[in-house]
Image 1 (cartoon, rainbow, N blue to C red):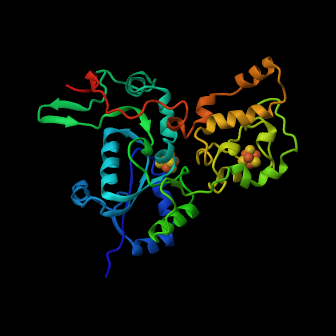
Image 2 (cartoon, rainbow, N blue to C red; image 1 turned 30 degrees about the vertical axis):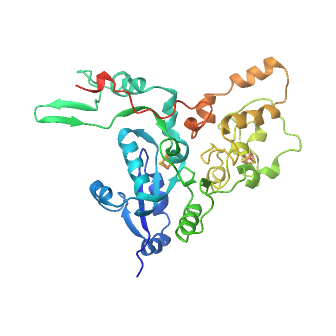
Image 3 (cartoon, rainbow, N blue to C red; image 1 turned 45 degrees about the vertical axis):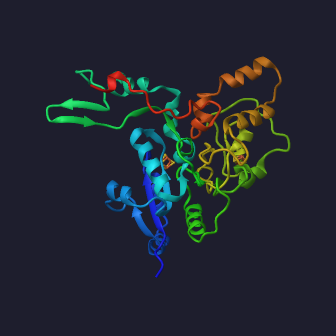
Length: 332
Ligand code: SF4
Ligand code: SF4
C-alpha cells in the first residue's frame, strides 16, 4: 500500500487562533487524519525537533505554517520545514503578511524591550535586567532565541507555495484548500487560496450604497448607529472592504463591525492601505484643502488602522531580512 501523504502543522509567532481554525474542521478533521500521516502538530501531540531533522529533505508532502517570524527560533523552524517539505502553505494573516504582531514594526527592538521590561507602569525590575540571548550561570550557559528588530511574514524568509489569509482563515476555505492540495488539484505556485474579488463585491451591504457616495466626515463605530443592511463607508465609518480580498465569510460585518483588512490586498494590489486611501479620497465631499486636512486629522492612528495586518508587506514595510546584528546587551 502506498504511503500516506505526510502532513506537518505548526506555529511560529502566533496566538493559536490558526490552530483553532484547523480544529474547527470538526468531523472533517477526522477524515483528514485518516488520509494523511501527521508528522508534526504540537497542538495535538508531542513531537521532537530531532525527529523532524532526521527526515529526508522533501519527505513532508504539505507543511501548514502559521504565525510570523519574530525571532531566530521561528526563522530556524521555517527554514527547516521548507527543507523538509514539498509544499509550504502560509496559513493565516500573520504568516501571509505579518499580521497584528507586525504592528510592532512601527517601533524597534530596543523600544519594545525597554517598554516591556523597564518602562511600562506595571513593571518592577529592580535589577534592570533585560532578556539576553546567552547568559552565563554557575552551571554553564542559558540561551534564548534572538529577538529580531522587526516581524517578517513567511515569504520574506522562505519560499512559499500557497497562501491562505484570514485571522484566522475561515473553516470552509481551510477544508477546501486542504482537500485540493491533498488531491493534487494544485493551482499555480504562489496562488492565494481565496476569492480574487474585493470584499465589497460580495458584501450584501453594497446594495445600500447611494449612486453617488460622498463622505463629509469620518466617524467612529460607536458614534452612530448603523443597521445590518447599511454600508459602513456610506455612513463615513472606515470599512476596508474596497481594498481587501474577499473570502473571510464576513464574520465581522455580520456582527456589525466594519472590515479591518485581515484578508490582505485584493489580487494584483500590493499595498491595501494606499489603495483604500485613494478610494477614500474619491469619496470626500469636498475639494477644499482645509476641509480635506480636517478629515485627515480626524483619522485616529491611520497607519495602525490601514496596515493592521499587512505592515511588513506594505510601502511602510521595513528592511528585508538580515541576520540579526548581535546587540552587546544581549550577550555576556
Ligand atoms: S492570523 Fe490571527 S488567528 Fe492566526 S496566529 Fe495570527 S493573530 Fe492568531
Ligand atoms: S465598504 Fe464595507 S460595508 Fe460597505 S459594501 Fe464594502 S465591505 Fe460592505
